[in-house]
Length: 452
Ligand SMILES: NC(=O)C1=CN([C@@H]2O[C@H](COP(=O)(O)OP(=O)(O)OC[C@H]3O[C@@H](n4cnc5c(N)ncnc54)[C@H](OP(=O)(O)O)[C@@H]3O)[C@@H](O)[C@H]2O)[C@@H](O)CC1
Ligand SMILES: Nc1ncnc2c1ncn2[C@@H]1O[C@H](COP(=O)(O)OP(=O)(O)O)[C@@H](O)[C@H]1O
Ligand SMILES: [K+]
Image (cartoon, rainbow, N blue to C red):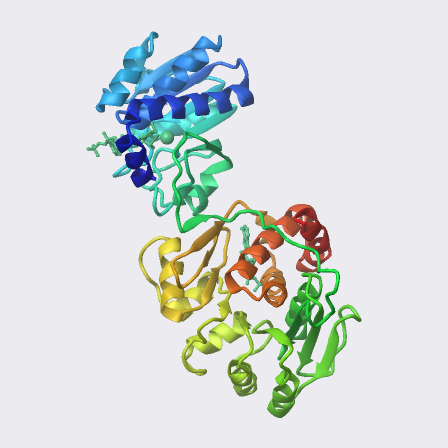
């Protein structure tokens, strides 16, 4: 974003014009949400504070009662100009009385250290007392590139990103400090290989498709039948043409459309995977970690089919029992599995996911409240603000099945992972509160229909 802003400034647009655009776009969002409720704008010493002065001026011109409180003097040329254009009084932050709406323009991308304790406390108090609160560009106190909190940060109603999403809008803990997100257009295009996960464009099967051309998925089960059943069921409702479940015992369950193949011995798994029509093979959910599980996983790894590896498959791989990670596969680790596989590395979650993808030459779906999908070529997509009700047992098995299903449909690993994560989040949104993993699966066709 900084480079993109510099390019626009170098092309002849003064920095102050960008500040006016940013302030106008943010003021419009505040005006639409809060109407004529009174506003307190907190302005810091840098350009984020300058945006605050512009917002204050524009809202006042619309007839909104506005007060401004500042933390120190303005220090940049643009923020000095914005402050000079504000005709009203400026009180010190420590004297500010609360208002119905609070606009935080203390610090944005220039924050280099936590706020001093008194300023952090004042910010928290004023945000908590307001019914509407807005963080301009970012909540003051968050580190832009990692989403870490450098000092205590209150929870804002709206985070208004200026021009482009920054990592802190999407990565926890910072992402959890903004209930809703809005991006204000300021005419600076910041093309990047790393971005927020966008809703996918999906297509119905072509007129002449048949079940094998639409994608044949195999789910290799193991010790715990429930997990591979959830995954198979999700794959079956993902748009794929056919799902085969290779069961370690002759258990039943799940929709009749899923073909269950008894594959108890290694030789039986090998035979069942000997089918060139297979477009995706999933292993991991319910696999187990004993010698039998290792044997099953080895056959999967040697099958030559496009792979999705989750749960116990990742745990076995992290013990080194199955050799190096299979390049080209999709790996779907949660936090603990990721750390076991790749170690406890430094950097933001985006940095860690990208490094893992580069090293393993796999697509890595690093799950959690902020899911990062990373590719070996440096592309990454971040999904955040999904339903927190997803934190329930078995939702990862559903995601793994969905990834395998979309891989069979698209034959494109990064695209499949992105589509699956988005559909998983949309199914959760539709499922509402207190759902269980099984309920997500029923919502998948509706989620797919929405993107056709
Ligand atoms: N660039 C553009 O074209 C556009 C940018 N725009 C806006 O600019 C924002 C970035 O502005 P910015 O770079 O001036 O940084 P900002 O976040 O205001 O703070 C930096 C100041 O604070 C200081 N400081 C830092 N930490 C501190 C602390 N804990 N406690 C006390 N002081 C601290 C630091 O000085 P230091 O003490 O570190 O030397 C510096 O003086 C961006 O988020 C967006 O809102 C838009 O207008 C669109 C056009
Ligand atoms: N608080 C949360 N907000 C949004 N999504 C979440 C949250 N917690 C978990 N998830 C999602 O739910 C799924 C949980 O997967 P996982 O941890 O493998 O669970 P399980 O092993 O029980 O299936 C992942 O897709 C993850 O991204
Ligand atoms: K801010």
